[in-house]
Image 1 (cartoon, rainbow, N blue to C red):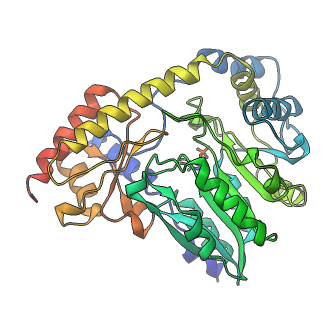
Image 2: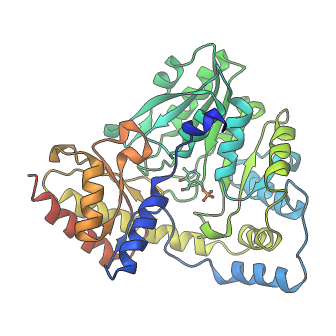
Length: 388
Ligand code: PLP
């Protein structure tokens, strides 16, 4: 007999679409991959060199389970400078990617009879991990007309006695939407009435914002004893394959996050931690340059998509995604996802890969060249002619 919760585990469709695209490529089909969410840039050279140097210097052993102390100090310094506050390094845990922080939070705050609030659509691992824990995911919608931002009153109205955790994500995957600070402030104020609820803020795209300043829940002292922050190096420094991220935990639960980490992965691989240290303490122009490219491409893809009859697209505020509305085509987003890949060789994701409220949308990753973005959009245009 297997664990009965296994059937509640979801997945990340981005990886199955990637596998399907690779399979088609193997048989000679040319694929434009706008499916998986990762920067198309290489990790900056000084970061790679720091990882290689660590290997050459014999940094081959385990590190403390929470991560190298200089790395956690660098994270604290970086966040303190950028947001004015960061808890002590005893509350900072270096993890193999940002993703494990989601799973750990679900294990710590979930379980049978608990309710955890999360956006829908959202990064699919939220729903998967929470369901696996035995807790019930409770969805709140994002307002497309307001650039896919959340409504604090809607979130607060969904709180019950069973609610243990509220998950938020801004800039948001899959839409690139940003929730304005005024709405975040409203949520934090509303939470004064619910002192036992913890807030989970996924800030993995915090530095990839186009026309606004980065914003963090760390800037709200009234909530910092019941705040979890997820962040990392994957998106900001083009380090998705290195597998390194971090979680900042409330003082009263870091012990459990550390125990889960020790049970599961012991520590993050050592050279990767040295590479992340070089990323955080080194020159930051590389981040600004990548961000500028993502912004320009976001404008390009939005313009292209809005030029297709039957499709409308909000200009994303950050990250590297576009989330066009295709509901006027009158068919499911999964059908369009499959036809676009199989008939036109363009990999994108159906909005439903991010939850039921993603229906009527597609997610494009705009982390690709201008030429391929243009070509992908013109192929989508050809496909839409079947329906409009
Ligand atoms: N959170 C969000 C919103 C994401 O989009 C992703 C990756 O796509 C992650 C977390 C996980 O990032 P990592 O690759 O560092 O595990």
